Length: 119
Image (cartoon, rainbow, N blue to C red; front, top):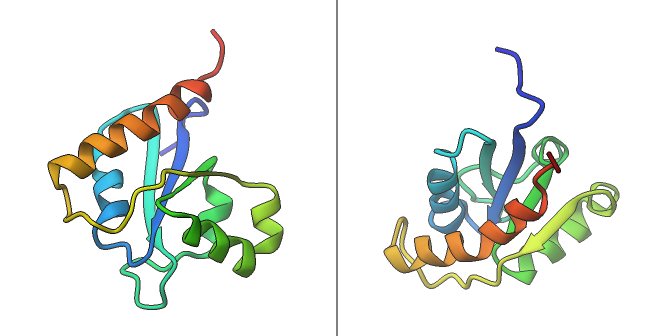
């Protein structure tokens, strides 16, 4: 399948890739203009963050400063050329918890509009 050039590739990153980033992946995956993946920075993450995932993404959303710092430390060269946005969402939510879904929609949406190509 050929990749649509207008598709924005988004990577959501949290600690363990079990609650916040998989929730974000699920709610934004329904958007046909987005290609969405998720990963975690901890060694025991469901999907561990890799250089390949960072290189794949057009935009990386981290939930907390901690994840941005880990990316900076572990993948310094990729960090320099990657658009990373911190959502400031603490690890206080369950998977697909309505309050988390609402926060994600509110905090991610403005960045998606900002990166839309001008028609």
